[in-house]
Image (cartoon, rainbow over all chains, first blue to last red; front, side):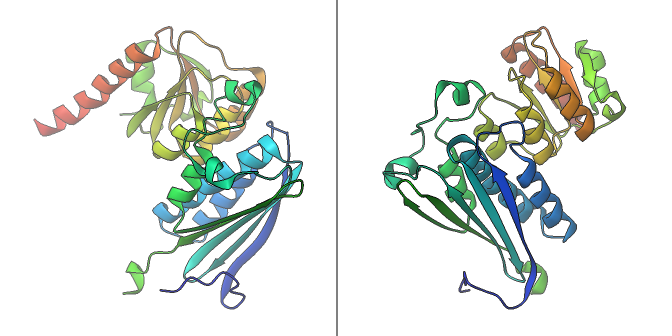
Length: 154
Length: 118
């Protein structure tokens, strides 16, 4: 099956959610909303679980490093697309940032149990397709695709 | 097994959402790194941690944990309690360190399965 990124047809759901950078009091709110929406749509538990993990990790990254960000959620009959675009410092070396255990988090973030260098790695491993791009001084864009199981359709 | 049984057996102090102690416990996960807990814990698990800040409630809520148990008599912050009450996530406190508490809960949950086999 080919995964199309720019699908505008047959979208079952489309919405955007704002994330406030630096505000750990609100961290997780967007992910929790998205998870409830996907659950209510009746998607398989494993699909919802994968989406919740990649959403939460992306949200924490925006809160930890960026000024602000937005999550664009698109659900069609075959995939859940989660795009996270932030306005932030950008990532100088993406290969390094993707390595498990690598983190630039400060002490405050680490004390809360974040910044273990697992975030981007988790996002990649729980996505069926993953794309990351970043521009220094502007921000970072993540695109995660989670495939909806076709078992029911067979 | 539900949380209420674990609370009674291990003499835990319940700090919030007592109305949800009937939550069924399907397993447990011990950890203080939130990314690790997010990736590896499952729905219905009890989460054992020493993190006390409000972000633990978002994690537990997102993962549909049965509840959170804080180790070494660590107390949740006021914001954590407020959020946990809103989200109806029970938070309990134990005087035991993580290793001992995890072992005891593991045995309790195992005992249930063993009885089933008999």
